[in-house]
Image 1 (tube, rainbow, N blue to C red):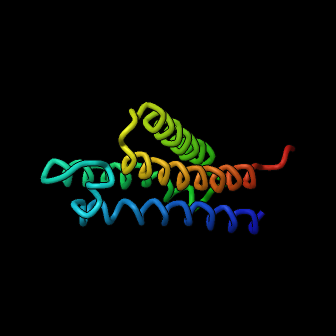
Image 2 (image 1 turned 180 degrees about the vertical axis):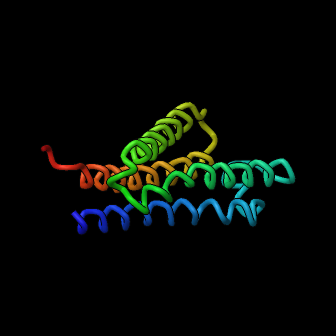
Image 3 (image 1 turned 90 degrees about the vertical axis):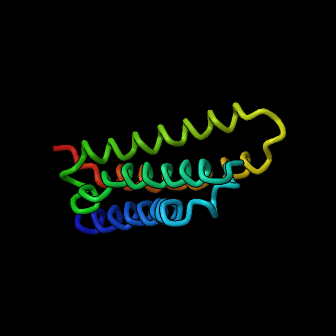
Length: 134
């Protein structure tokens, strides 16, 4: 069981680190990323910084699960639900883009790939930390 917990912590930590690798730059240097969302100027920087802050808020739930993925099952389920909601929302946004937004579509595809990989890791960790049936 200890080995499964270690693997789950590593998977959760990898997804958290990947999420933070997007969140922190968005918060600290939002203007550098605004063009990927077809935004610019102060409104674009504010929007990207806000997105970074939302990423930070979303990832707070990972910390207690990393500490004890066995005892934090409900919170682990919430982490999975957040990932599924994010992936579904990104898919919907991408599918609803009208033609002519290649830069925005490319950004959306990167998020989809990133979050699909994260969901697979999280799901494997969740399943790997199930308690054996009594």
